[in-house]
Image 1: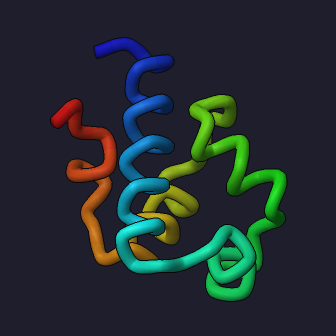
Image 2: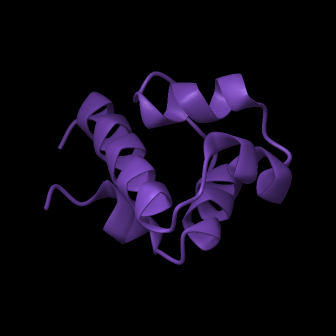
Length: 72
C-alpha cells in the first residue's frame, strides 16, 4: 500500500466513523483543537499527518490507526 492510498483510506474511514457517531467537523474541532480546514484535508486524503495527530483522530472515533488505514 503506497502513501497516497494510506492517506485516502485513513481520511475516508475517519469520515465514515465520524458520521456514524453523528459528529460534525465542528465537533471534531472542539474535541481536538485542529482547524476545520485541517480536518477536511485529512478526510480528503490531502494531508499527511503525524503519528500523534493520527492517534488523536483515532481516539475521537474510538478506532485504532490500523482500522482507519484499512482498505475494508
